Image (tube, rainbow over all chains, first blue to last red; front, side, top):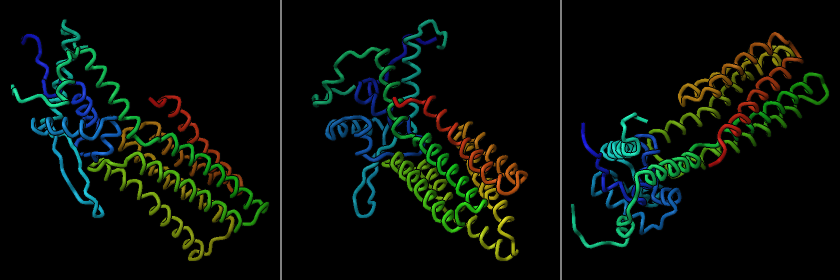
Length: 104
Length: 214
């Protein structure tokens, strides 16, 4: 079998992990506005933007801008790759914590 | 890996971060998100449980001539508007800022309620005049018809969102509608109000006990 599982460095940082976990909680195909995401995370706008940009560079997140009633709205959404990366990351964490491979 | 100059957010990344801490972060953040994004369904059940009991009692008072049918109708409509407004507010608030498949699903389901209930009301009114039904016949049929439709919508919601109490409640309300016809006037109004409303209150309290706000 493989050795110690690698933790995805894009996700393995507290702030980005919280962003990714939040986006992964939404149903697949759902997106969330920047202010609501900020509210769910208690992060400053600047901090959240920085982390979203990193996730976007890794193609884990897609940012879309739309106009609703003439107001610009920014949405963030996990891509399919992002969702898979988060699942792999969670599995890697679990196997690190249960190294005997009992799957718990 | 890249070696770009550090930005302020990178400070956070340099700190060692244990797998156990990471897993705890995921769990607490997801619990928080679920608590804030899921509509407080317990509130829906409590609003409507109280509303149905009130409507049943009003219909009973009207059927026994304790109050006039007009008074019962107006007060009943007020109860429905208050409960409907309150549940729309809860539903819209919980879903704000989220768009996409599940938001559309929730919105379409939520909108089906006022539309279907209005059409059922028109159907009941039209049946009364077209078929020349008597007041007693109407007072037995009306609650039962509403119970059948409401029960069907609840059980559909339970099936779609995988919420068993909601599903069972829907079937229970359909059964209450059927039983109320056997009870005959005026007892049917109390069977309807207390049976359906009581069922909703039970599910509402179960929801509160089962899922405390995290």
